[in-house]
Image (cartoon, rainbow, N blue to C red; front, top):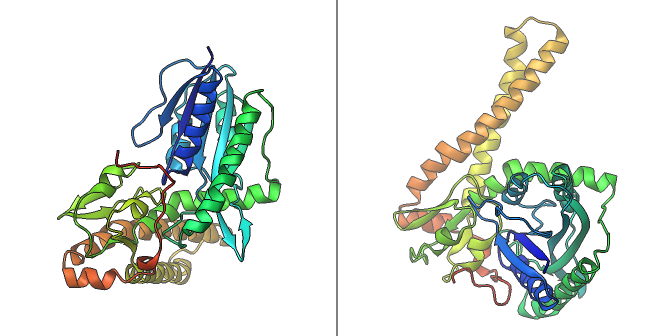
Length: 348
């Protein structure tokens, strides 16, 4: 009996549902299947397998950062056949289905595994209902019911290609690989962390700590019975979608203040560097420009740290006051729907 290990990360359950479909069908034809969920501090299983499958949601045209870190911890291999499935978000726009776009995500994961000598023979996509609740209103029940079977059909195609070991590798093209790689890199290094800082629990929060307990990267901590988001948010949107009180929102005032403070300090720092460094350093022009660029990069990173740590800590203190919290809870997400894949219940 051939053994398959399915390694996967899931936020709101679309990937978990896809993995269940794959597992059931492979078991039905005689495979031994082990599903291995990627979460904080989870390492690759220390056992031999005939096949590997890796599945993940696409976040800003990349695999989640935690998934890529997990992949880099996979042991070096000797050609085990491997398949990769990327899960995208889909919506209906004016009655027309618009599928999510993978960008370079599959190719980046493929390259990580190939460097470890895995024989990646199959990569594929499947689109399920979009659930980036932090930014857009999730699909309606009607749209979800229409999109979900289409995603399942794409998973079925992936399974049908896997069983005969059909070699089929997704390619997005050089230009699309370039821009999506840059965007994904910025999102992974900065964007996901910054977006996590704008979450807030409004006055409906009961302090149940479900969001903290079920965060796959354990970035949510409880303080005075209220959740606060750390610096390592994956932006998987699990927390905002599973809160039983729909109490987690995106704080518009916090977004405006944090962004304005950071942008203002950064502009001032760049201005100061460009004005004062030429006065203080009488050096060759090429070296001067290089020094200015280096200082601008250092200042930008330092001010991001200032936003993520001391300024964020200051706002945390303010948010302990109920009236202040009510003001900061002003949000466009209060009227948004919430989404988890049918049958997905991370509370169990």
